[in-house]
Amino acid sequence: MVADRAAEDPFMKVKKMIKDLIVKLMEEANSEADQHAYCETELATNKQTRENKAAEVEELTAKIDELAALSSELTAEIAALADDMAALTSKRAEATKIRNEEKSVNAKTVADAKEAQLAVEAATKVLKDYYAAAGGAALLQGARSMQQEMSDASLTPYKGMQAEGGGIFGLLEVILSDFSRLETETNSMEDEATSAYDKFMNESEESLAVKETEKKHRTNKKDRTDQSITELTKERQLTQGELDAALDYYDKLKADCVDKGLSYEERVKSREAEVQSLQEALQILEGEDLAA
Figure 1 (cartoon, helix red, strand yellow):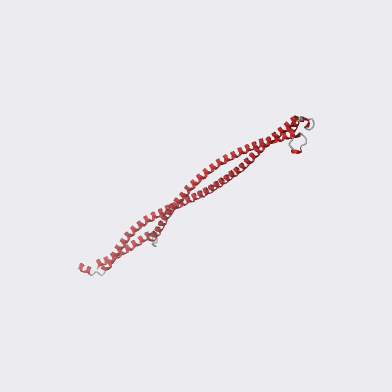
Figure 2: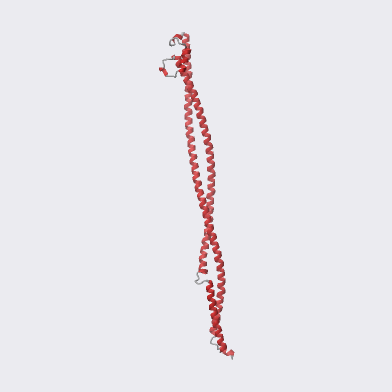
């Protein structure tokens, strides 16, 4: 009788539907639990990845900016050294030009002075020989001796042919002295100018060598700095790509794991309440069966 009545149970289909729904809800709960665990893990991992990559991009950017500033500073220093070297090279060329001109003028002055001295000595000799032969001591202005004339002339600055005292031999002696002094002073000036020129050229050559070394060092440092900038820029691009990928993945995780309306805990609680209600309804229906 019980079997016959069970076969005729009007709630069998409803109870089966309730049981199937409870099973489905339990399966969904298990699946969502797995999904929740997956989301929790992926979100935590993604967050760590985003934070790490963002920090790396920021650090690389700071390094690149620092190296770019250093490269700019080195560029300015290299340009300044190049300008200094060009200016110093120009000064050396100008000094050499002036020195060559001075040397040429001084050489000509010395040569002319020597030639003039030889001419004065030759003229003096001719006159001395003539007056000696002619007994011409009396012809020398008044009764003054040649020695006295020459002595007086040596104490009187040379005034050209306007001089009235001293006589011919005195004038010739002064002229000879002037040319001799001119030769001596010119040689002295030439020695001083040569010494000053040599000193300047040596010092400027040393300065050029120092600046050239500094320029080479700074150029090498700038090349290394620029190479580092290039390498860091490539590294930043790769890191930025990884950060962008992590951000894109986070958007996907938000859609799958975060933007669900109710939170996971709320969905679990709601599902448990639904299952409990279904189980209670099933118990009531099964109790009706027993009552029947």
